Length: 171
View 1: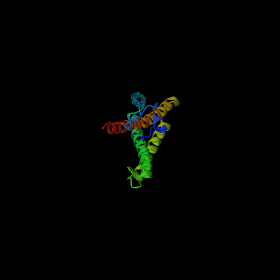
View 2 (view 1 turned 45 degrees about the vertical axis):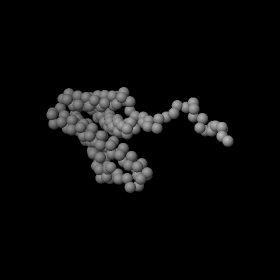
View 3 (view 1 turned 90 degrees about the vertical axis):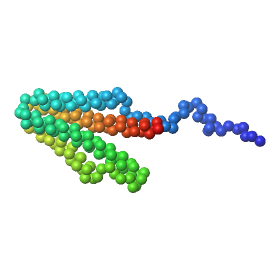
View 4 (view 1 turned 30 degrees about the vertical axis):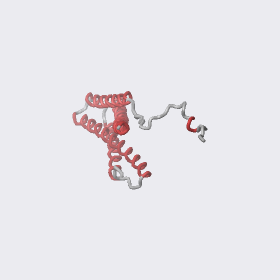
């Protein structure tokens, strides 16, 4: 004798669109990536355009340029280290033998480098013999440069991880 009863749980999904098992949603749209790059280029242009037009000796302008480059580099490194450590903590919860990507010393150095870059910018701004609105311009340009560096590093890393994950799902 054949059982003709239908399983209610099995047929309950009929009206729902099935999800592909190999679906991976990328985190950043092309527009967001374009905006991240555009904001970084704009911040870079504001900072270095202002340094170029500064009516100070070359040594002072060189100091501001070096500090701006240090801000960019340390912002990128700090964002990478923070994200690596966060991911490593999660992976360690899943597998206690997971090896961390960054040592405590490297994490400490990345924080110290970033703090020193901000301190150097602050010292440079407080000793700059220009009107307050000029000093404010450089302070805002530096803050804009830091934020856009952090966002750009996150965006580039997300896009690279998404590219790897999409390749794995398509294979």
